[in-house]
Length: 133
Image (cartoon, rainbow, N blue to C red):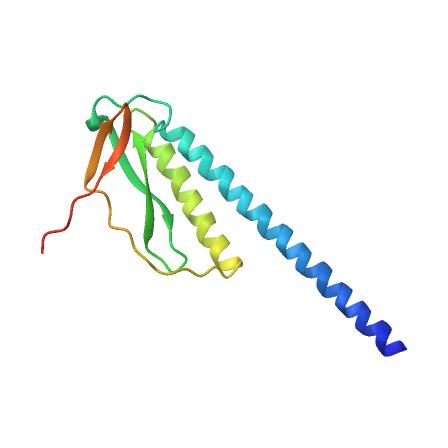
């Protein structure tokens, strides 16, 4: 009977531990999402009308779990670029720490950087061109 009680106790402990890990990972993920949303808002890419592509630039915003860039964000050159890029760097470091902490793995796909930006329907859009062979 003591063995059964001990086994039940261990199972309960493991269940609580796993639940706490899931909650903690969800909280970490939500913090990353808040940081990402702040960066998008600072970029002005969703709120400012694009009439001149020269007024826009881009930077990496997401890295794969195994390294390398797999997403970019467009930002207005009218913002405080130093402050913006510092926020992006903070986010990338938090993302790397999250991946390491939670042992996130990925497919290691790498994304080629956009070749430029264009204005389409008042929004800044990436332009991609095929690399020359």
